[in-house]
Image (cartoon, rainbow, N blue to C red):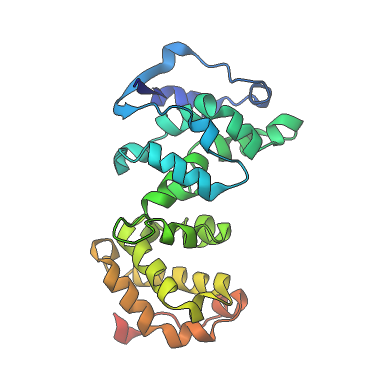
Length: 253
């Protein structure tokens, strides 16, 4: 099996800085072969394009993760692989997923937001976001190792906005602990799910200002939410959270 090709990082930045929307409307993207090199220890999967679906992000995310599960977090945090996949191996998928490039309505920002790694974090990125969403939630100890992944993909706003933009939710133990709590407490997750996830994100963002959460395990996050369960049950709207539902108490710190 051949090693995976990637763009040179300087070339990725050059592409990002000089976007021509017309180049994204053809059957393939015209790139410079001299700006491609091989990625060590990562192999190019066969027929990946046939196993992903622009209408099913969960299916696509799992397929992408399964083929690139050998990636280290450091390698997955770079843009060289994801930019190459978006512009070459998975170019037709990207066109179908973000069709404004085909009907001529895409501008530079639209392409930058979808074809390149987002400055707002890996989960907010298109292909990288799919991989990271699975990496942060897959649990080999569960009967269905993707059970928590399916919870995260239940609502894309939760995945990419409420959780995706927060640094703490790039910590695997935090994500698993929070999602386990939601699975084990259907009275929390079956109604007002969006609003309660906003509360959870706000709570841990504030707690993270005074605690080193990145070093704590999943049980800590589950226990924190158990302590806040009575408050969570009272949350019924986004406005309620933003207007000041109690979040972090001094005695919790």
